[in-house]
Length: 330
Image (cartoon, rainbow, N blue to C red; front, side, top):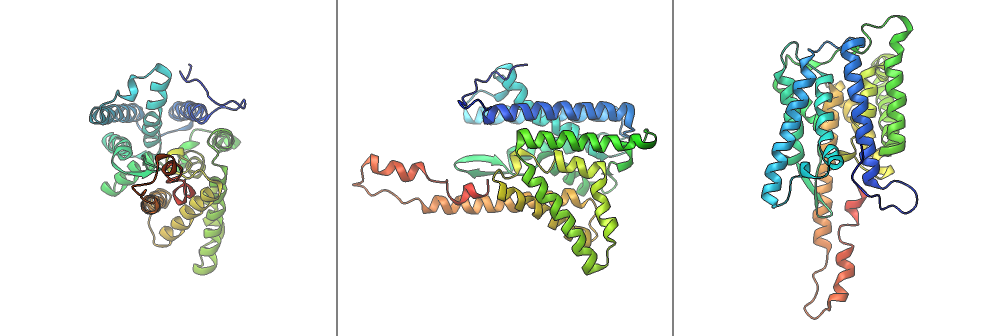
C-alpha cells in the first residue's frame, strides 16, 4: 500500500509524514497480530466480539466527528483523501479501539469497552490546545477512554496480566514480553524517536520504587517487579509514547516520562489502583496546561506593529511568533 504522499526530504531520509505513516502502519500490524495471537494462542479472556465492536465504534466515532468538523470548517473530510492518506487518518482510531479491547476487562459485557473507544476518539476533538496557531489534542485517546470507564464503572478492571501467557507452557511464557520489548524498542527508536521518553519513564519508575522503599518501607523487589510484566512493557512501548500527546524534544521527553513515573508513585502510595493509566492522564493534563500558558504568553509577547511601520519590517517578528517557549515543550 502506498502513502499517496510525495516525500519532500532531499537528504535521502524520510520526511516526518512518511515516518508517521510507517509508524502507524507498523503499530497497527503489531497490535492486530497481538490481538489475533492473544485470542488464539496466549489466553486473552475478553470475548471475541470485544475487539470487533470496539474498533467499529472507534472508526464510526472518528468518521462522524471528522464529518462535523469538516462541515463547520467548510473543507473536505480527511477520510475522502487518496486511499493511503485515508488509511493513515483512520489508523489511530483503529489502534485505539484495539488497545481498549486488549487492556480493559468487563467480563461478557461489551459496552464499557465500546464506551472507552468512543470517549477516547472524542477526546481528540473536545480537548485541544493551540500550539503555534494549530489546535492539537493533548490527551492520550485510548488511555483517557480507559480511565473514564474505570471511574464510571468500578466493576470494570484492567485485563489480568497472566492472560498474556496463560496458555503457554514453561519458558515459552517469556516470549510475549520479550517480543513486545524488542519490536516496541525498534519502532520507537527508528520511527517515533521516543527512546528518551522511555528512558525517563523507566528510570523514573525505578527511582520512585526505591524512594517508596526507603521512605515508607515498601518492598523494593515487589515495587520493581512490575517492570517485568507484559502490561508494563505494552504501556511503555505503545501507550506512553503516543506521538500526538507527548513531547518531541529529547529533554522534554525525559521530563515527561519522569513526571508520569513520579505521579504513579504518589498514586500508588495513596492506594489508587490502576495507577499507570491515571498517572498518564494527569501528566497529559499538566502538559496541556503548560502549553496553554506558554501559548498565551507568546501571543502576548508579539509586539503590535506601529502604524508607520512598513510590511517588510513587520514580517520577521510575526514569522517567529510562537517559536519560543511553546516550542520548548513540543
